[in-house]
Length: 332
Image (cartoon, rainbow, N blue to C red; front, top):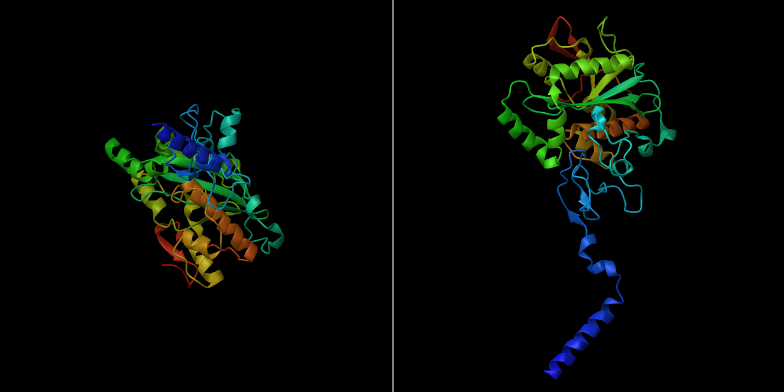
């Protein structure tokens, strides 16, 4: 028995001596990186975490994740507060909340403005970057207003959209499948409104920024939608909502067509473009507000490279189903 005690004592001493040469953090399980699903209703991403979530944190908050392109010693990339993007955040005076969640759409940090070659694309002052989400009905309507001269975001509009021709059970299944895996289904249920209301609020927003005159109608004022192909989504949703297609949706710039004609190569979508242009993706793919910001970064890159942006498609106002494609070489 005495021999066994002496052996255990020597083992403990050896372990203590070995550990003394190593940083204590190596064997501390609480700080090892883990991959989790972030289920906060306020955020827009699922990312690897560098520390565990504090037990004292609010149920609407989570530990700060790092974006794939951000190093631990750099400024941290933070997920967007999805209540803020819809003008519903009530924690703007809460320093902890502001530290954990992003409340800015500025793209200046990603831009080398010194190389900007293109100042006036078809005499447009603004680009409205739009990325609609939803296959059956539109679920998300995010827009970033980009200044054509500074190439930075000057305003934004974001709404989650509640389907109008689905049962509650089907909606719940649909949202769980679409947003549940991103951890933002709760904020969708908290804020989603019918498409008709979204359009009313969107027109008020455009009028506020002098992009559209609701009384006169017609196209946008010195601005154009920049998107990945909404030729059918908006008309279909208007039909479902039993409303007339708004006049400002009669023309647009298709990113895929501009990319094809400028770089002389096809890109199936945003991820392909970002990979080819060496732009790291931030946020969650297929969360519309994150995709819109990433598309805006592609837009910035193309403008810096010298791309001239032109309207690529136009509808006949007398027959909106009829679309004239203005580029002979285009993605079909």
